[in-house]
Image (cartoon, rainbow, N blue to C red; front, top):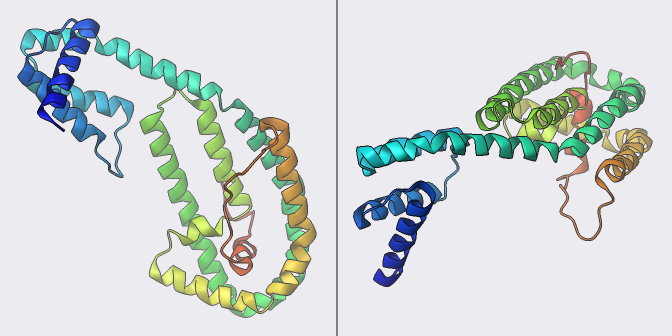
Length: 269
């Protein structure tokens, strides 16, 4: 940044603060605030919630502003908090169609998909009797993963949305319930420790021996699920047109690991 650009930014910030808060910044104060804003915008994997950012800003500005200026700054904070809350409430309304789609999806899972999977997999149970202990271990670890994922989701939601986005929360809880009914192996795999991954890889190898027969048995059920998802999306969100990015499955055998973890009665959500 050139000296001329920096001078322009300082003058612009001084003008902004005078117009919006009635605070007349010195050049030195404006320069410090610009440094604060640059630090705040720096790329990172950690993010403040809106309220945390305001609190951090308050601490920084107390060091930059005079006592009288700081009082003026604080007087505007309630309005900024109200703006945050109103924005969250308004944004939450946009998720009502997604909530309806998620609710219909859960009904389909409970009434159609789960009974169909139970019927499809009944004939394959004897194949895994010899490794049942390993399957039980993996299911127990998946149950822990579900509990951890739910807690992490709730902490993140209440940190960033508090009680102002109930629709967003309902969708997240329904997605969690979906992972209980029909296990999400790929989410689980990304969080596995070394011993759990070793057991999963062993069972994946065993599963590969019957993968073709298993895929044949599940074909109609999975085709019906795909058709339902297409109809459900069109009903609530409209038909998707043009080019869209979709999540690709690394391979069909890994996709079939849901049959190892499948146990609707074990995972309480």
